[in-house]
Amino acid sequence: MPLDPARRHQIEQDAITAAWEAERLAACDDAIALLREIADLDRDDDGDVILGVDENGHNDLMSRITAFLATNDQ
Image (tube, rainbow, N blue to C red):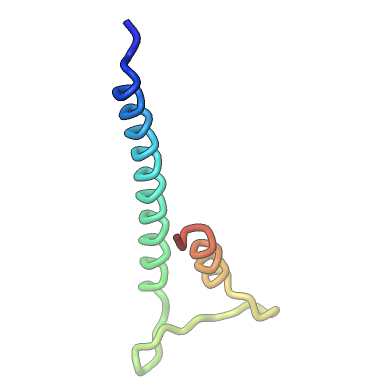
């Protein structure tokens, strides 16, 4: 027995919402992982985080934060 159009539409909308929520939860998990990594960094006497760089002036953590924001800033 086929579904009526209104019920079918509701099922489709529920699936879209579930996919969006799963994506947002994954982004939250990624953000928490980055925040935990930041929390573990060394701090100076004032309590500010010390961000080190490699010989080329790059910081992997900052690159990952930038990529995260570019992907998830909605």
